[in-house]
Amino acid sequence: MLGEHHTLVLEFPEQRDRIHELKVSDNHFHRLMEEYDELTKKVERLEQEGEPLTDESMEDLKKRRLELKDELYEYLK
Image 1 (cartoon, rainbow, N blue to C red):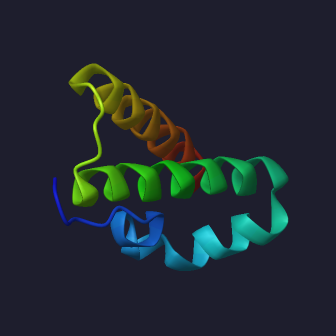
Image 2 (tube, rainbow, N blue to C red):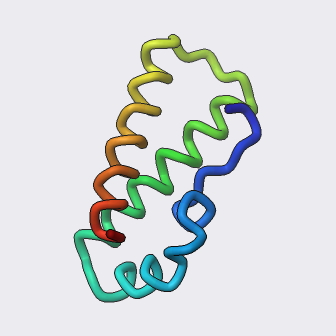
């Protein structure tokens, strides 16, 4: 949605400490989180600036972000 931020800590506020712990101790989690953050920033920028992008391309970005979010959540369980 336009204007919504999707940082991992905002998505899972109850997991704030666990997210930080994994970010500093697990390289794979850290890389996944970096990719998630980069995709989030890209999607938000594209939505805010209205840059030309096909609906399919935007949906692909959002699907990848959702896949990453699911994978990151598996770490947090």
